[in-house]
Image (tube, rainbow, N blue to C red; front, side, top):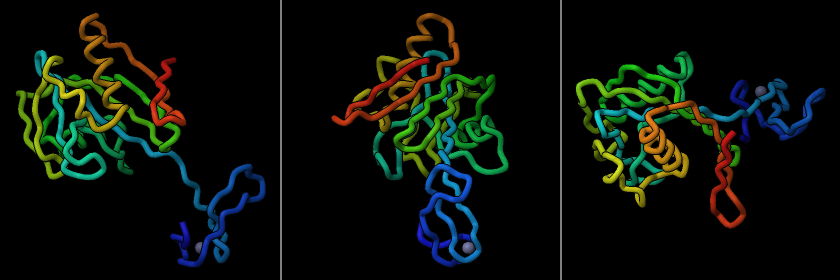
Length: 187
Ligand code: ZN
């Protein structure tokens, strides 16, 4: 951040009085611009033995498969955001939505909150951010073409829980190691 979003003057990275972290502080109007993690919200939309994946039409990871998910917007609840993303990316509507997985990804300042729901009428088609949408059973999932580690982990949990017949809520921290691999720690 270089310029103040309130007055347009230059900001400086300093520790404000009474704080213990560096913040962008406007040198003119003294506004403190806090930066906090972003929330990503999305869904596993199920239909019989299959779940819905979207092939990304946007960067990053253009052309790879993902679950419908995206940044939460102001003025909506988290579950509303998950339903909205599923509709925008796959023209799909859900019923029986329930909280399923929360992943905290500190190295990219994101928290994923993912739901489970039933795809109404099995209907889906690509939204503007998707090249293609399709339903996959476990054997059909393109595991080598999944866009993000967090999605891979979410899918793995889903098929594991499906075999057990119980979808409990999961929480995990995902962190990136110095060699580029990921560590996933469940609590
Ligand atoms: Zn300012």
